[in-house]
Image (cartoon, rainbow, N blue to C red; front, side, top):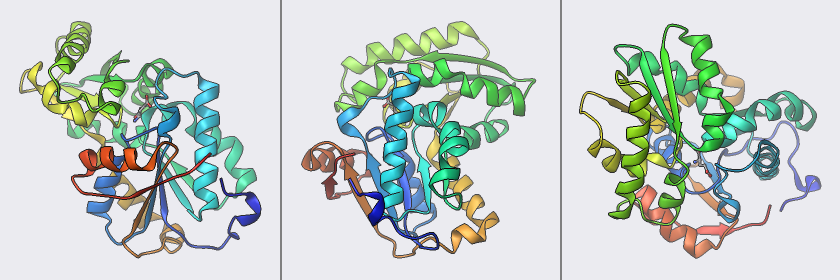
Length: 283
Ligand code: DGL
């Protein structure tokens, strides 16, 4: 943990912070590295306390704020919550209540708004489904954003409590995962048989995409967030040159985890298709 006395002054520049409860945010980071390779990144996975999906609002908020403060203390002017659960349960409170007191010139952004903005690119009939953690679905964050931006859409959501544990434990490609994937996909499509686009509303779920596809007709689009959030970040930086100027450009990525570093490094290679070396920290 870095103390506030070690924090950098207001006008500093630094890397983009990327936070997730565990490994899932690596599916977002990978797209940032592909679309915006010039910048430096710090990835922080709170693996010791993952999954967040079934935790209460207060706990997800407290853990997320600790992670954001850690990334700020390490010099990040901008932090992306690459986690739907944290975006759903903590983002607004951090933006409205905490940021003005910490440093109003820094920014924390999430993954839900850009995903909802992109929906017209994916659905033809406006029947949209969401799969996510119990926390994300229970927060109704997607529903409320969709009501605001696309009031004519028909929206159905279903939570999949077993999917993150399957991915976090390296079981996503194993035969046992089929049972849980099939069960949840059938439950979602029972809510609305006309769904033609499904939001994978958890950054872990792209790892299950081959199994998900097995239980859906080919005309149903699966919406992965990595590309969407990376395009949205690129657009944000174009529109906010004052922030863009504060980001360092060394093309590096530092990986931090609250769990064992060797375990993180070996699991992360599944998400990133490349070898990395992580450091263990305490929040
Ligand atoms: N990747 C997080 C999300 O997008 C996972 C949640 C969890 O830790 O349960 O929701």
